[in-house]
Amino acid sequence: MSEYSSSRSTMTWLLQRISAIMLVVFLFTHMNVNHLSLGERIIDFSLVNARLSGSLVWKVFYILFVPCCVFHAMNGLWGIIADYRPSDMVRRVAIALLWLVGLALTYFGADTLINLFKA
Amino acid sequence: MSFKGFAGIFVNEARLNPNIGTFSYVLHRLTGIGLAVYLIMHTWVLSSARSGPEAFTQRLGTVQTPLFHALELLLAVGVFFHMLNGIRIIIADFFSATRRHKAIFWIVMILFVAVMTWTVISVLPKLFGH
Image (cartoon, rainbow over all chains, first blue to last red; front, side, top):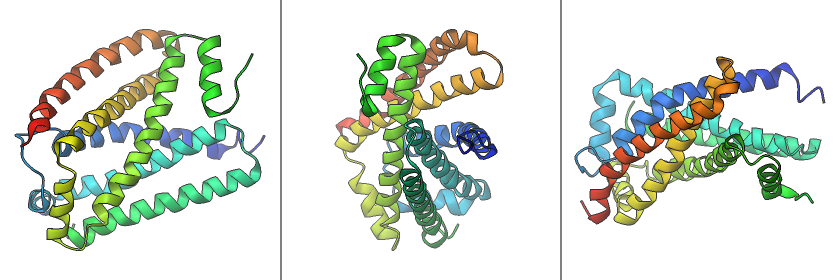
């Protein structure tokens, strides 16, 4: 029981909200720039590269956006799993898997930014 | 009678407490799971083509067909519902506005309709080719 009411839970509850507020800005911008129309342009490498190489703001934007999004998703999934009161075994496996997936996604995202876009 | 399992929790809650709070909780959770799955696919689909500019452009091309743009509308529903309902949760949590959460729900749903209108206007031309 103590593990469910620890200060760590309070910290992740707060971090979920802090990352949420950041994602409101990040995701609304990302959706408008990349997923919605903006003049019916087809998005390709050069379009994204021009944006990322042209300004420090976009580099910082994506370097923060990726881990922020990944944390919010993995911590959100953990919140759902924890609601079902899993056994210690299931908890450990789930947490390990979420960390693995989260770190892998952060690595792939960062590697794309750094090595493909030279961000 | 009570149901068990993942879906059972939703069914029980909806029967015992058929209110806005329950339905928004169910939708928040389902869109959250959907978005987490999408995030994994999205990151993998693009980053697995990071070997060079040509590969990246080609991969971006495969996900910019009318079918994918139609699916993008579904993505926007998930993103914007989760985002706006999340704002409602944060307002209720941080500003002691729990007793006004139903009114806040309808306010954010008006915003949801506005954002989705903008989204449909933006995406609609792409459903018929660029």
